[in-house]
Length: 347
Image (cartoon, rainbow, N blue to C red; front, side, top):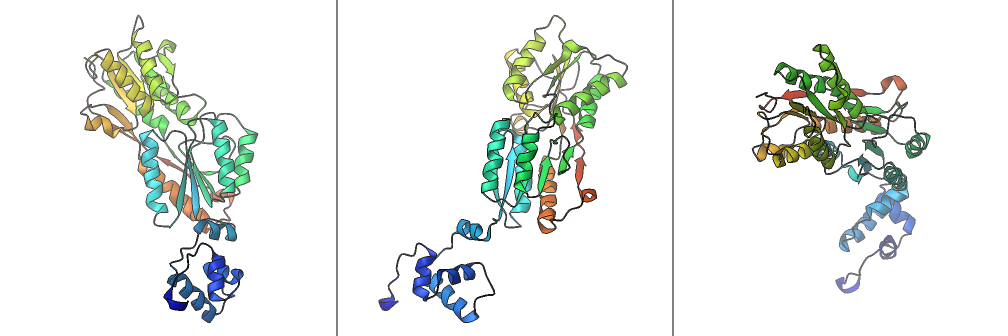
């Protein structure tokens, strides 16, 4: 360029004009095509460098009809469980130079379907998803939306009925069994459960663990101590107050997710009940904030970050080896551990 002046470069058309080549040639250089001679490639690259041209990654990906992006769809970004899972996913995706497009469905199936449609248009390469709660029944519209993606899909935490997707789950039945069995061993017989939605795999499995522990210890499941929440804080708060207002309140609570457990603890604080003395309590999933605040609550602790890592490792394998056979589908089940901190005690 004359006088060393630099023009404001906005598009590859500008680069093409300065390098005296076609737009198609610049596009081939951007995509590292072997259809361009080394001499021409060097001229184009030199013009780009001289003008501080930064290629538009989105435009490049659209021209190739693929992106370097994966979709991650979760039902509640406020839940610390999903924060840990996402951290695990990103620890692998970052190393693979994969960008993450994160969607929060807020447990809304209609919202989830809209996100799936958007992800189709974004041409993501793969998807890691925790489906909405209502996955106990076959949903042809939902399956159609997933099939339309035509990409590798890895489920995490929740399943999709009649599907054969790869997935990473936890043994929630065993985790809940350990928690309720522990409460019984501590002398509790009247144990209430704040369960999750029975339409979701975690809701069903954690309730099954509760009933298994009671029956294995020779006790009977009392329906008045069984209450269903929605995995959100407010339902844990309201149900705790309802349960403890009964004529024969339980001596212990098993709360089957971390957000409802936070709501439960809030209610117990308002009722001025001391955990581990006035009421026994075990929650499901760790909440680091409680430990920071010095609130010692026993929990069923799942390897949350490791679940994200394993899901991303499976997806990475599928991206590298897309022709997966049915017998090669991976269904990973990780085991939780019971962390006791004294809240399980009976006065």
